[in-house]
Length: 362
Image (tube, rainbow, N blue to C red; front, side, top):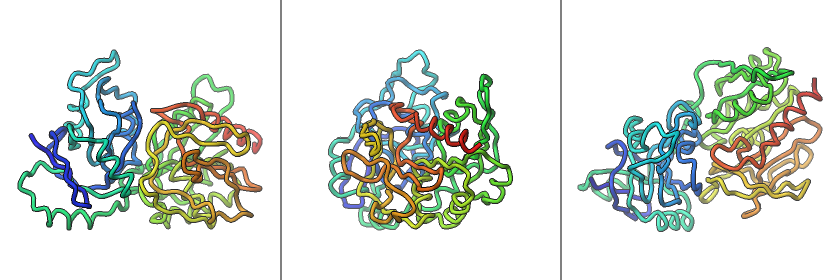
């Protein structure tokens, strides 16, 4: 069956329908990872977006549910050059086609993804519609596409109740960490638990007073989807957590919310950073790490109050802010994903730094 991807600039890509038969309008973004498509599909940060994979062959090692970063996939639609129909891997449990169908996610294959990504890079992220309706009215469709906006996605992705994940059994000392779930990847919790942390996961809109009443040794602010400036209620609670003097480590959206809570500003990027091959530079050591990233917004460097924080990491490619260290506080944040999955583990040491901060605080 034919499928059509209609972009807000009027460009139309025709390909083959994959996944479920469903019409969807969403924001079209691209990911440059060569592997990790399941982690991409199940990363809550992609809520409200359709993902183009730049690597041409997707699905060749199938689906292994242990690699999922959430209990369900969150992408609106999946866009690929070629979808593997016969996965081959000893861990494979299901084909990607079956996974997409079972989770009601539509997609399109057989299009020139290089041409599509070039468009997104030159014109910026665009909205688009994916449809199998060959008789669509272009003018009506474009009107609908232009009206679409990614909104209130944290409410969709955050957990609904408090959950406790125990520390690894071999842990000699256990630290209590409050993990604020703004649409978190599961590997953040796993990375903490294996380092001896009892992780209590709180829904995004939990009052700071409730979190602090549980007396955590440290607080983790997770990744998540959408425009950070929309989250006014959450930003107010983040400021209270910051003022508590409990050590804080923030990742991705958490990094942006923390900056906004302390007088900084954020802005939407032209096409964002999404993939597993983004170089970031540690300004203190001069070392460059390869990182996994997934964000469409960034903290504006000139907005950061100099008396409050300093830039700790920058992106080697475009010099955007990739990390902040707060002065006179045991608080730091990064825009990239040190828990990776899929991706390089170069920056895992940041979790160890967080553990050390809690040890000193204790």
